[in-house]
Amino acid sequence: MDAGADAERRGAAVRNWRRRSHGINLVRRVLPLMMIAVLGGLGWWLFSQASKSDATAPTGPVEIHMKNPVFQGRDDGRPFILQASEAVRDGKDYARIALVDPKMEIQEKPGEPPTRISAATGVYREDTLILDLKGDVRYSDAAGWRFLTTNAVVDTRRDVVTGNRGIEGEGPSGQFKADGYVIYNQGERVVLRGNVRTVSDEK
View (tube, rainbow, N blue to C red):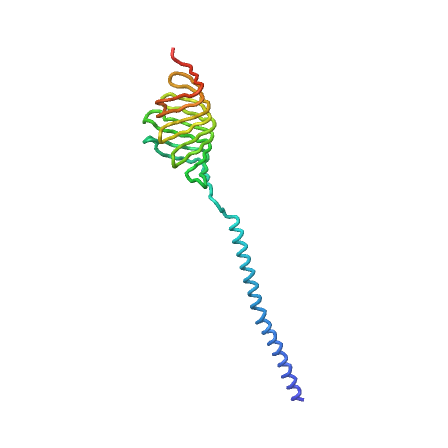
């Protein structure tokens, strides 16, 4: 009876060992596959996130926006200051700066009123130091020239201001109107062009 019971216990132990061995073998086969699947899923997630980041990242030149910028330089030795309410530096042409509400002051001589020019919009080039103004252009200088026009090109290196739109204002000797103009050396010499009409203040 004891021998039969002992044989039964050994048989049960063998069956349990076989079941455990089968389970262990199954785990050994399945676990690597599960690890590969998890790593593969993690790799795909990382790749998809990187792809999204690349898709949203800038791929070309980036514009630089500025609030209340101030540019300083020298006009043939004379200091000038250029300000604006907003400015955008071109992403493709770094020297080109678009301006909103630009205002320029050029100091001719210490103690004298500076030449002042303002407009609605403008484009300033840092490589040539040329300021191209458009819309509600207002000009005044120490020589007594003051006028309103719609465009002006300020060449600070040559100390010349030009425009090819209608101009109306006043000078040292009276009021004037014209189709275009050239101003040299902060008003030392002014040339009016096309349909020039003047009203002298002299009596």
